[in-house]
Length: 268
Image (tube, rainbow, N blue to C red; front, side, top):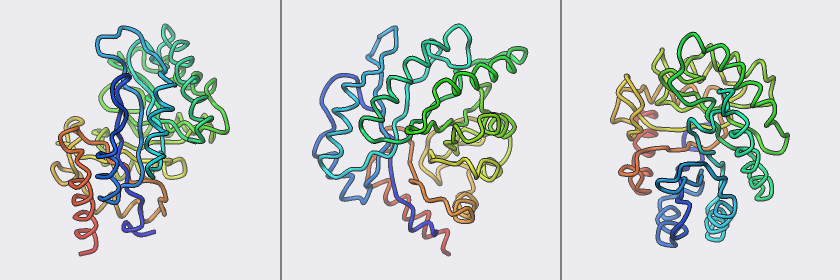
């Protein structure tokens, strides 16, 4: 597998109300050769509780598919009140994610992205929170919709190679991994990619400043993109190269040009 063979995608949340994805946007995606998308439904502005918004999700997915865009994955909502690592809120998170996974199954979407926690997590609570996250993921397991647990920054569950390896090993194939390359600041992201190789389901691609997540375009920050591409090639990664960047960088033409530039530099 060479980088030129990766399928190119973009992660784009969609509002809980308002217009569906426009034909103009979809045409821009297709013209740029971006035929894959990850989507999810944002909560309503100012809304205090979380909703699955599955009817809205169905409409968004159908709109993309009607015009030839493949839906690779669905990103579930995240926040304190649905934190599956927190015993106080885990049941609410499990119920919400289970409803979304039901919708994904009906839509023939076979992977969802899940955050293992919110934050901050005090050091003294960390082991309890990891254990609660694992129990929640066990409860959510179903063979037809794979959970891709995302590595997270700062004090979140999944902020280290040790966290991710432990959780994935305990769950023994019931959960895969989404590596967000701009979420790891306790070492080299290439080491994270290699450490979770067997479980790697998908990627979130963006750049950062080495201190915190930024969701910049690759090349705007400090990440070693030749090294990242090389690691993915070495493990024969066959998923989508999924850009998850700030809205101002999410123009399809800009993403295509950025990807082409990454490939050109890798091949030099």
